[in-house]
Image (cartoon, rainbow, N blue to C red; front, top):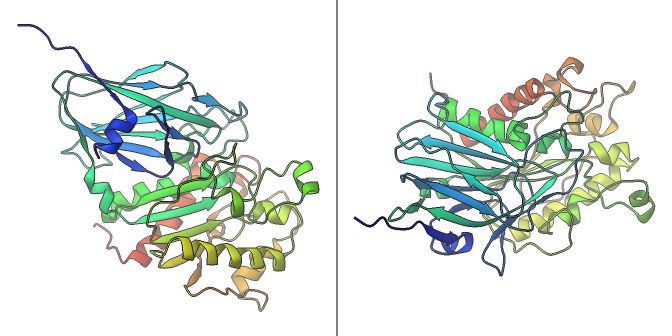
Length: 366
């Protein structure tokens, strides 16, 4: 009997026919590929074939080699009959890609949920095509389409930045507190969330002046949020329906001597814009800036936000809730006095997960 040849599907063909469940910021290119420039973007689908390969395009590259040793991508394959946390049956591979690179998925002989995640803040990833076994089908992971979305805007701590390869964050953004909290909630109270991450090391909330940019401040999330990439000014085609917006910014603003009044004014402006763009939002959570344990004084921003100071006035029509995470941190849980170790990220994630659990009204599993 003649053996059928494998079938090549472009990434955009699969997305257009709803066979891929895409989360966060994948851009559909005119060449038929899917392009991600913000870590945390993922592609999920269900597959039960004997062979499956992903091919990557020419735009795939590492933009910053000082990324702490995190690889570009992580691929997770788990049987559809297993819980997401059943690591005994889950196959995980982390890898770097480049032009023409072909990655063979570690299939395990039964129907599986596959998730490919862009985990490195310092890379751009272009998924060009899928090489599928003859007669085999990729199906959408429609379950994720029903999950509430929590959109997190942050800096190095939110995206899993590792300031030194001596303390690597192997899973990149998946080891940072937003995505770790996502897994904790799924495991402990069956609360499934989509996390959409817009975070970059050194990012501030307030737009830096020309002089501040010259001093090395990268950019403001206030404006960069609306760009497809941290490295370009091409605009993102706004999509999605987040339920909650989380602002985890301010550490770099305070370090750059931005006044608290200016920070709050810009925050209010940003929140008003976000509410207009995303009418689905029901709540805004503000994580106070993280203090550097090497500094002698305390953060003025944190003191104002946690004390309910008269200087704090949120002029938006939705609740703005303070979600303090650093109260559970100590210096020994950081790499350098500021950036958390993997253990430190776990501590932050537990605190963040509990805050989310109470808000969503989820019940812990005994």
